[in-house]
Each structure stands twice: as structure tokens, then as C-alpha cells.
Image 1 (spheres, rainbow, N blue to C red):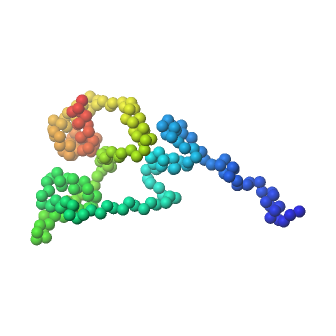
Image 2: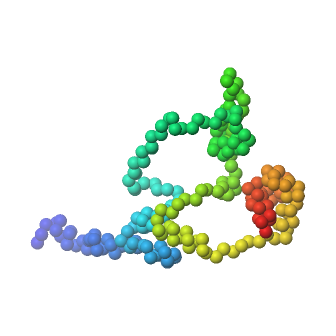
Length: 212
């Protein structure tokens, strides 16, 4: 005998216990790097392990599921200690190029005289896809011992040096003979720059040619 609920419970064989839940839990097996394998904690999830090791699970950031931490309070800076900004009339051509790098596409900086007349407009230049890929970023200090060990391992790895072919050496020599170190002129040279390489790419090839 028994109630209808008790009979249904007796027939139900799929009981969600802690033991069965752990059995179906996805386990991560490390097959690659020995440093990560040695520091991997099987009791933690993949994301928790990556955070402990100082790594990222995705370069695109997280889409949720994690508590947002309050941002650090900005330090209070005394106005008397701040340096006065450099006036635009004192800027050199090198300073203007540096300002252009800080401005995004469509952004600009207007210079006016004491009467309010426009003297100069500095406009941010849109970077090409190759220039974005080849941009140099300042090195970031490793935060954990695992990251430092991985960086040391990568630095000591075998690197195969690529040599310039005879055709490339002859081609770079023609560019240097014609334009010197003016890489923008090399970029606009339709006769020699037949592969339409960027100024940054041409600069790297010329530096490699000069350092051989």
C-alpha cells in the first residue's frame, strides 16, 4: 500500500544525488604544457584554475556569471602638482605626430589664437589593419610564478631565423637607393611597391636588410 506520490517515487530510478552529479561533471585533462599540468587543481573549475594561474580563458572578456568588483578609488592629485599643458603653438612636428596617435578616427584637436581664430586642426588618422596588427605594446609584468615560468619557457624556445631571399634583398636595395629611410614614400611608390605593403612592413624589411 501507499499513496500515489509514494508509488511514483518508488518507480523513479533517476535520483539526482551528489555522487551521480559528480560522475557526470565534465573533467578537464591537461595534455599540453607541463607547467600548467603541474599547477592544475582538479577540484577547481577551468575558469577558477585560469584565474589562479594568472591566465585568461577568453580574450574577448566575460559575458556574465561573475560578480563585478568595485573599481579602485582614484588617487587625489593636488592641482598645484599638475604640470601645465604644453600650448599648441609650441608644438613641433614630432609632437603633432604623437598627438595624432592618441586621437581616434574622426577625433580632432583645434588650435586657436588669442582672438579665437583657428590656426591649426590636428585630426586623428585611421590605422590600417596591418598597422593595428604590427603595433608594439608595452610589456606587461607577470603577476604569478606560473606566468613567469611560461614566459621564461617561451624565451628559451628554439626560434627559426628567416632569411631574406635574393629577390627581396635586391628589391629592398632599390627602395633604399630611391627613397632612403622615407618609408611613406616607399609605400606610395607604385612602381616598386607592387605588393602594396604598408610603411610599417617596409620599415621592418629595410631594418632587417641593414642589420644583416
